[in-house]
Image (tube, rainbow, N blue to C red; front, side):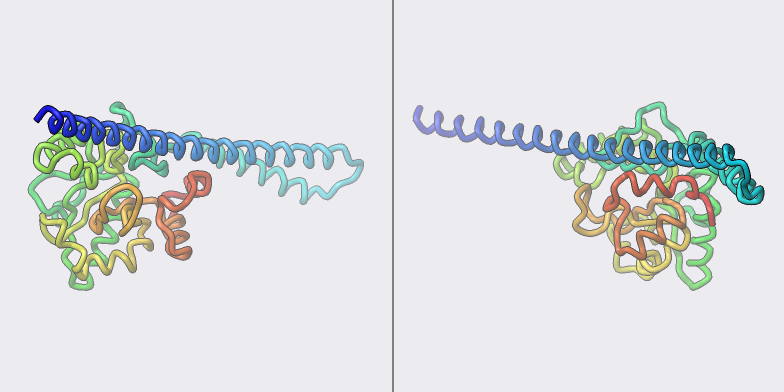
Length: 283
């Protein structure tokens, strides 16, 4: 009997050790991804600085010349002015809106979108007042109106969620389904795209698991990019279970680029994504 108990203890402790190793390996993998994305950001910034240095060098050469084309210099100066304005806009823009979350970057408890607006009640499934980023609201309303015009009946089931709300949501799902299962479809607080205020869950009923086979889902797959929205978690993604209802606004330019390339948001390195930040709210 003692021998059997000893064997059982060895197996149990070994299993726990294996689980801990897996957990540590996952943590290491996440940190590796984070470091790579930081490297991409740094490279992009260095390239931008070098480009500006080259512009200044050319401008000085032209200024030192005894004779030069005034119209050419005027164009250079206007270009420099536009570059400065673009840099200022980038500095003032919310740097979090196009960052990757979903177990990669962390959004702290103090972050809230700069300004929120209510989603019209006609598009909200429940009696709750749902909010979304103020700049995103016109894009969302236009998309939902287009869907309604074709006879579809889309509803927003969830939108902006605060850090604390996400924490409570995760805790409730852990109690209901267990931590392992909950981790597959509910983000931890600080890793949810909903905290950005640019993400919505769209369905035809409160049961989002029934959304995939609907005409509404098929319409979104074909047309959401025209309104700046992309599917965050397609089938076989590396982060969560397939979520056909989960759509994030990234801007028409980036969404169109992803559509043309047949890629998803998390397929692109952060450096390439950053190039679309300036025109995120452009039509």
